Amino acid sequence: MTALARSAFVHRAVIAGAVLTSLFSGVHLASAQGGGWSNPVPLSSAATTSWFPDVAADLSGTVHVVWSSGVTFGFADSYDTVMYTNRQQGSDWSTPLDIVALPSKGAVTRPTLLADPSGVLDMTFRSYMVYYSSAPAQSVATSTLLSPRPISSGDNGYFSRVERDGQDHLHLVYTEYAQTSDCPDCLHVYYRASNDGGLSWSYPQDISRISNGAAKPQIVVDGKQVLHVVWEAGRGGDLGQLSDPTTVMYSASDDGGKSWRVPIQLDAAGTQARNVAIGLTGKDQLVVAWLGLPQDIVYYQTSSDQGLSWTSAQPIPGLTGGWGVYQSRTDGYAMTTDSAGVVHLLAVGRTTPGQASLSVLHVAWDGLEWSAPEEIVTLSGDVPEWPRAAVGLGNRLHVVWFVRDQAHIWGGDGLFRYRVWYAEKDLDAPSATPVVWPTLTPTSSGPVQPSDAMPTPLPWVQGPSPTIQVAGASDSVVVPADSENQALLVIVTALSPVFLLLVGVMVVAYRRRR
Image 1 (spheres, one colour):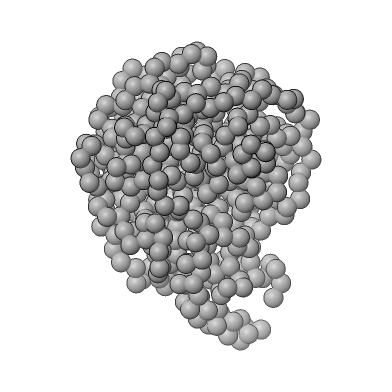
Image 2 (tube, helix red, strand yellow; image 1 turned 120 degrees about the horizontal axis):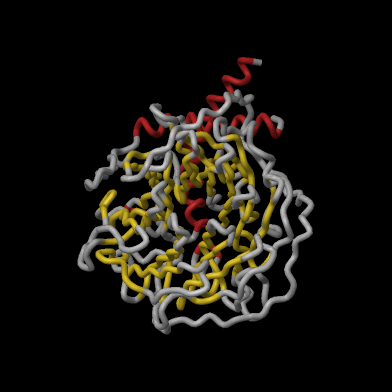
């Protein structure tokens, strides 16, 4: 079987497996808690673990969702995949497709999405190597994806996030191993730019410039085209995890990414910080939120002068963290902005410190104060994690997250049943008229398998930078490691009999057609 035929075979088998297993999957009891939120619906099948989703909404009103998953046909033929689905205005969700299939390295692909105004859907993903790709928003398929561009230097990358500025330039931040003598297991935040739609990229710059590690970088671009980046800092960074103490770091570029300010620590002294998120109001006010430990309180800070000065850290009223119930080092918060300039924060947490269950919570910042927390969903036993959000047509808030089933929160024996969920809400903000994209008809092909060939970089490079010491707290909380390799090994073991049966059926059908 050729590589192309095998890739298409994987593509068909994933769909068949999803259909079969969904017929026998149990019903997950989850309900919306009011506030205008729709009832949560599962987007992924129970066939295999699905986690770390992302969501984007384009100008036509179409909602796009991707997530990490995997498929195996026995121990010698496994793939790490990027799954994709969308929902157009007035339509149902499309059948999930594995638009990227990478020979398995036991990696969570961690895809991210950005819908830009020109009708391009930008995407990053990983298989230890971080990649960038894109597709026309009206036709996201394996045949329409840009040949993925390697971003990180070899198999050293983890998190990534991409943004576009007002000149249609791409700005991408990602983490990879820095290989320094004082912290060989630490990942740093790197930056690359593209002014040709992602075909080529500038030389990498280490914008974190710290002796510690980094994780979960996020980037926004304000109205003056200043780039703002935040990240979680601490020892390590692989598998999305950092050792205590941790802190929130911030840096910015005033010249389109050619040079970067020396990073500063945002969070209050004596407070460990995790799950950082950054947003931008309609008046270019920056707002950053994070989980403060050991208090288990969600704090925020704002800046009205492009990050040159910041308010003191204050708690978000009524919002308690989830650390007291579930001590996750892989969770994260998300922010997005509606057409009225209001910033929406999504977080897993609680509304009271004594609450034993966990909720996906929504609060909004109008530049002056926070709204009361809204519970999108509340779960007991099972654990929600990694909420992501996007605003569509100016006033429709779309939220995705994944759920760890109670039996396998920390791994363990048997089939992992992590699933991706979705909910939405109409906002009190002006609506936008949907754009009608030209019709594109993709050709049939299998999932993308990128090359490791490195494109020619643009001549942007930054010289030596000073090193700064990150301050942190002395408190430490020990939790079990959440190993991706262990998770995928269990998935491979559990699903092998099912997919071997599917392979046999498909091979027989294939031979008969010949």
